[in-house]
Length: 304
Picture 1: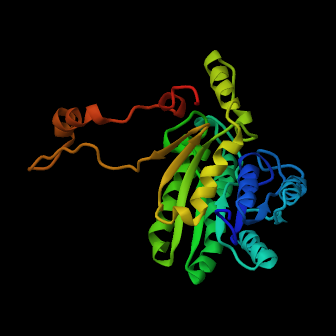
Picture 2: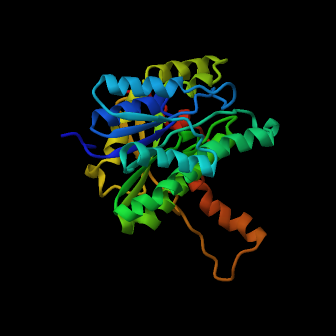
């Protein structure tokens, strides 16, 4: 018996990389899988092709699984509805949604265009909402369902040149928590994974300096398949008590992230003025201010 026997999963952006590996792993665990991929370039532009999704479907079927493909975009409410409907048409139900589809438009903030901002927000954040919302009513009616959303340490911690991507990925964390709070009474769970992997998404990372080249070399050692077991587990009934959480999969490591909480307070009975904040308030808080660091500063050791 597989962990996902009898379940139907939708995996967006499953034509390659992490999405493909999650789709393959879910099929091996017994799920019927809707492989969603628009077949576009990393930036979300260019000629569309059904080939990437069809290749994932073929691999699943060669291994004895069942799959269907869908080429609708997550970044539009109507087409997101068609993604969910394709699961109902092909397999009669939907139990799992993995919001993995993504694009990159990296740019240093003071040069980032509104188009670069909106393109990334539309796919990552709006897309996660649209597909999740389209599935939510079906989950509510059947009294069960699991969302797995892909976030990133670029949002959880920070990174250069990714204001659009970072904002979208941190927004997905808040979206996931809200879904978990609103839908737990219907037996619906929602969790996030911050994946570490060398894939088409990370292949665009700049590697000009020796430090950047060293970071890329570490990423190349981590295959996208390392993220799939955690996604399968979170989508399964074995994780029925796990809800509203943030995890990371890093080679052979698994992490759980905390949520923002107060770490230090200061009180003044007569209230605060700008001067008293400068003289007393901020000095009492300063030892607890978060550093301006990036993912590579926090995860400073080689993947193990």
